[in-house]
Structures are given as structure tokens and as C-alpha cells.
Amino acid sequence: MNCLRRLTPLLSRTTTALCPLSSAIASRPVLLTTAKTSTKSLLNRQYRRWTSSSSSSPVLSTRSDDEAVYIDWNAAYANHIGLFDNNITSSYSHVWLRDNCPCEACVHPSSRQKLHSMADIDLNTTPRSIHLDTSTDTLVIEWEQPLRHQQQHEGGHKSHYPLAYLRRYASQQSSQEFRFENLIPRTWARDEYQLEWISHDDYMTTEQGLHRVVEKLYNDGLVFLEGVPADDHQSVTRVAERIGNIQETFYGRDFDVKNVAKSVNIAYTSLYLGFHMDLMYLDCPPGIQLLHCMKNNVTGGASIFLDSYRAVELLKQQYPECYDILRKTPVSFHYINNGHHMYYRRPTIVTDEGYGLGSSWNMHVNYAPQFQGPMDELTPKEMKRFYQAFQRFADFIEDESLRYQITLQPGQLVLFANRRVLHGRTAFDPASGDRHLKGTYLALDSLKDKVRTLGAKYGMNPV
Ligand SMILES: [Fe+2]
Ligand SMILES: [Zn+2]
Image (cartoon, rainbow, N blue to C red):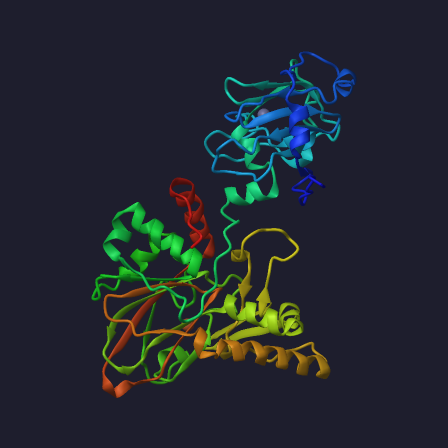
């Protein structure tokens, strides 16, 4: 049986799963500490180990050679970061370790900014001594070489690495878990989306309420609040600021979606507004949009939402060549009106495939037919193939079984992921009453920030 599993290298490190046999071999007496040894003698120390058979210890054994320090992590050790299925060995290259020393001389204690650059690390950086302090679960390394451009200092530089810190970077998987990038949102169709009204007061006043909104927004890209003061024009920005700073646009800090004559934007008329994402013509389109319903007593005027990731999944399964074309062909988005000329070009589907960055929150769909400009740079043959691919994708987007429809009432508010969840509105009769939604935007970074900080405190349930 082949019990070795190679994972993708992270930085200059590699990770290998240990088979039960190699774990058994590792259970020998404790030994790693060496004091005041030269580089030469360090090379002769290869495969000296500190070992432990205790399931309460994070590390089974460590060793070093002329390039790296190797740690055999204990899968039985419980820690919410980097729960491994098998015991694994992580290699930490000497340059990586020296560069990522967490001491106060290397990372400013209050600003948390690094005080040296990767360019300052001597490529021949070697430990003078390595010591695993089991009383504090810390790996202590004393370095032979100073940083480049630095004078040699007496006694060298001593780095203390908490094992929890090293474990975070033990594998690509564990570092993704640290950033909550391992959560792959489950896509949804109309009948699979589970509506849950979250109380505005809980959200505004408790961390649990905020956490629930952030979690659901991360998982589904679509969340609804109720009990939002309907007559307060500041409500929507206040709700947004609970997550992060408002992303202002040329529409301002917030915007009103009302029926107005001679509208500069189709959103401000009573026509059917097909599925789209906002501001695709900006360099950084907002990641989150909020819409607060202040008035709605018209006939029609329902909000419609659709998980574009589901449409991408269907396209990929049924028309892989079209999926490929939509990933490779940049589409023009523009807004030339009202004294503005905005323009950006981006493919319809952007995925992180091949980069190993983790979750599909590193994937974007760019879809706003209303704001597409003329395509350029395609030959007539390519043009036709692109139009066909786009039409197949659009057919999934128009599939009613994917469309979630809801008529917002005054006091209700929706938050949705603008780079994932498409939105639109059914037509309404402007003579039948008033319809007024107030909206604002947030950057996706603000949501990710909250996912990581609240996730570290309360966990992040991927469902
Ligand atoms: Fe919109
Ligand atoms: Zn340091």
C-alpha cells in the first residue's frame, strides 16, 4: 500500500503524509537540541529527532538538514487549525523560517508590520542551534547569518516560533483553514435556498446576530433582515457599516431606487430589470450590495435573485467548451452617460483553478448584459463561438428553477454578494403606488475580514 501522499508545495515547503510505519519509527527518545554548533556539524546532524508518542503533543518528531527543518505533526492532537487526517511531515525551509520570525525585532509589536523584506534574507541562512521547548510548545532557532546589509552581531538572532504558528502553515490545507478559504459554498437553486429572516436588532446589537448574517452571506451570498426602521434613510448604511466601510461609487454613499422619469439608469424605471451584477465597469466592483425596502405598494416589483455559481456548474457539466470560452474571453463593460465614461474588461467567469487559493469566493462571475459595450478583438469565427457560449450561459440564468423571487416589504432589507448572486426586478405598474428601495455597497474584503475574525471566535459553519 502506498501510504505517502504528496501535497502541493506552499512557498518553499512541502508536506508529506506519514504512514503508520514511519510514525512508529519516529517514536524514539527525545533529541533535537544542540548548542553552539557550526554549520558543518549541523549538516552531520541530519535526522536527529525530538520525538513524542503522546496524543496530547502537537509534534511527534522534528529533524533538520542543510535546507530545512522538518516537523512530523500529530494528527491525534486536537486543534481547530490544521486538523489533519493523517500524521504529516511539513518542511520549513531555513530562509522561510528566518524570514517569518515572529519576534519584535522582525515584526513590529503594535503595527504588526514586517520590519525586513524577503530580499534581506541571506540565501545561505542556517540555524546555529535548534531547540524544541516542550514546556512552552515553542521551536527556538538561533541563526548563524545576519540579515543581508546588516553587520554581524554577537550571539546571532534568536527566533521563537510557537508551534501553533508553525502548525498554521503546516500544509496548504491548514493555511487555507486559518483564512477560512477551505469553505466551499454550496450553490443553490430556487427550491434549495432556505429563507431565514434575521432580526435587525439582533444583527445590530449582538455579535451572534452579526455572525449569523456574515455566515449566511458567505455560504449563500443572500441574506434577509427584518425589522429595519422603514422610515430611516440612514438604516441601510448603518446596517452595512456593521460589516465594514461603505464602498462609495459615483452614485454616492448610498442610492435610491425609485421610479423616475427620463432615468439615467434602467433600475430607476418601472420596466422589467433582467438579471445583472452592479458596476461591472469599475476596476473593483463592490462585493456586497444592500437594498432596504422603504416603500412598496405597487403592483409587481418583486426582487429576483439567482446563484450564478449554480449556473456556472451547469454550464461546466453540460457545455465544458462554452465554460472554457467564457473563462478566456474578456467582455467589455461600460457606462457612457451623464458626464461619465466608465470602462472595464473582464471574462464572464473568473476561477481560481490552478492557483490553489481555496474557496470559490476567489471565483467571480461578471454578468451585466445591460452594461456590456461592443466586444472587440475577436475574429468573426471567435465572435460567433463566444455569442453561442454566452447564450448557453444566459439560458441557465433564465431558467426559472434557479430563480428565487421575493417581494420586499417596508422594513425588510436584503444583503447579497454582487460578484456571485445575480439580481433583478419584475416590472411594476408605476401608477399603482410607490416603490422606494435605498441601497449601498461594501467591498468583498470587508465580508472576508468579518468571516475570518468572527470565524476564529465562533467557527464558520459551511451550510
Ligand atoms: Fe442593480
Ligand atoms: Zn526575529
